[in-house]
Length: 247
Image (cartoon, rainbow, N blue to C red; front, side, top):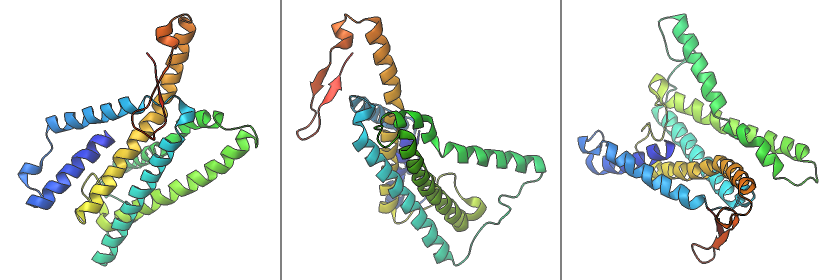
């Protein structure tokens, strides 16, 4: 859904820039969302030809670069708006609610959002399994985890704090796709494009594990089947590495 939101946000941002904010003609229809779904599926179909998890270093690097890029843009836009307004909106207590139960529920939702912001833990063991044994995988992963957690936490805190300081209790759920910012529209478009590229890579990071399990199961179940076990090398464009096709 993030890629669909990003694509819709780019289209809507350009429409707002051309026809003014809130223009009725700039709404997102169901047909438009279906189009972005099909485009996302087509892109994933191509990326699924990547042979295995070990061949995804370049895609992982691109996705990580896109993540840092749009996070930096969101941080910068929030800081710029806060400085431009000359005031810090919101408060330490957060969104005011009528009862303690409602506040408890909102706090629980926030804790869930924080946990969901670290999804790489799901593929942590798979990543560790791809590392060489010298130095030991555990030692390498501990260092990598410290760097990764510190870097992501820094960006999460900065984007969250500056976004809340810029908009207060009226802050949208997503500063970029939720149109917390409208200008400069080209920068917002670029940030949303980075979100799409990040999700394209992230989706494959999880999907490759499923592909591996399915490939191994069918290979063991039908060891004599050429349809299941034979691979074909295909190169989509000159200069790009070959990709593997199978059943």
